[in-house]
Length: 110
Image 1: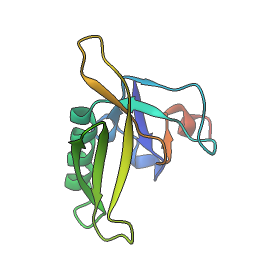
Image 2: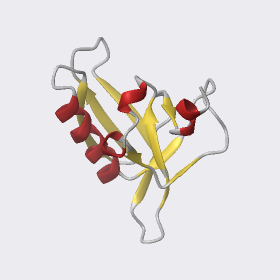
Image 3: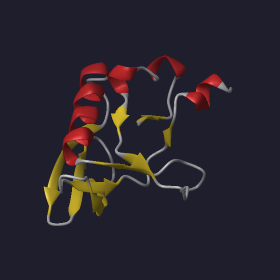
Image 4: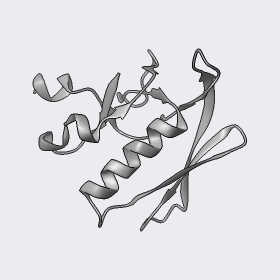
């Protein structure tokens, strides 16, 4: 499932999508709560660094049962996302709650 950071409508493109395994039913402050692998999140960050080289897009690392995302140019040194299950092949999934995630239809409806 493709989910996106809520930003300008022109950024809602397949190249800038997070390839989430699924999205949790419960919302966080109205925003989606995607579950994704570390590799999928890393590819998402890579795409955003290429799109916005002056942005805050850091790097993701698995540390125990946590996915840690370094944040460049921020008061917070990192965002941390807990492990929240696994894929059918046993790859850990992380709950990326805390960022403003939307689907493409969020913009199609607006």
